[in-house]
Length: 464
Image (cartoon, rainbow, N blue to C red; front, side):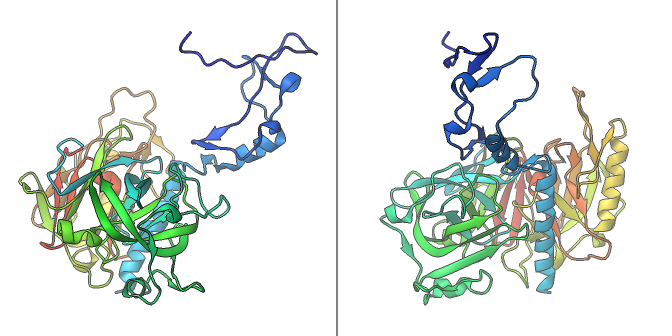
């Protein structure tokens, strides 16, 4: 009987045929509903266990709160693919618009390696420690952002989103300090973070993301622990006392972009400014974030990194060709963005975004190779989806990306090509001739090495 969980059964004073128990609470995605136990039927009016009834029937208050966690058939705190791709499209439209507008298997021997994992939201997270003593915080890693922030106390449920970790309380950290509003660090973020001196003479920040999520609070400094005994002292980050629209249960975000505010730049005195990560293809596999350049890079295929003349935060490469099932697409290299209008490598975007002509050729070739499988309705912006239910073995055609200098990357198959049955690529409008984006699905299982000093990006297959 050791495998059972027992609860009391309530004898019925009215109808003896029914078996009744008392329900105390309901959690959705690990988050308990904000309801007292008295909101559920109890005693002789408890919950009847009935094997012939299909759905659970709740009283009005529990049902209203439970149903409020759903949005268009998706959990609003763990978004479905349609909601994830809607936000993804908003993100890459913003990234491209911003750029144009400014017209662990085989873990590396880097200085420090931090485990990374795939979250339900198709973003990637690591767990690091903030403060002294170090409080574990699970944060999204984002190579397309340059700012770091976590939710901090005080921050009640009406001001902050739910997260899996306890809120960081700066008042309990012996190494915490707010950044003075008249400091150079505060002035450095004023150009794009909407910050300024608050009435308390603190450096405030206000971030607004393309998917309508946001974060506001106080720009701060504290010890950031990457691993036992390894830390970045005086790490600058946003201590958020209000945020909205984040539904991935993370505590915040750490930017890896190419600017002074990012973790990479702040840790550069110790690790030299290079970093790499391997994004695991499934939630059950392990990846990593590594600071520093490996001493042995013989397993990498390298291409040139293009410094941005407009937005320094982005890392850009030039894509020159794509192959499907071993056959190159009939698209000239000039059809792909190049130079300052190259492809932006972004761990925070899910699908890869191509110019209209290369994407049309890719879609045609891929659909031809997948003709044996029934199509499924598109999930915008993904327009090539398949119903693979019931297929024990699915043969997905290989897709390879070729970069400037000849570096060719065979995408992990199928997890680096398909996302929930949809081709993990999308196309820009024909009149949009700006940057493209290489999303995180295509980067799965590769160690992607960023070296801003040598202006190179390397890819090592089978790293996680």
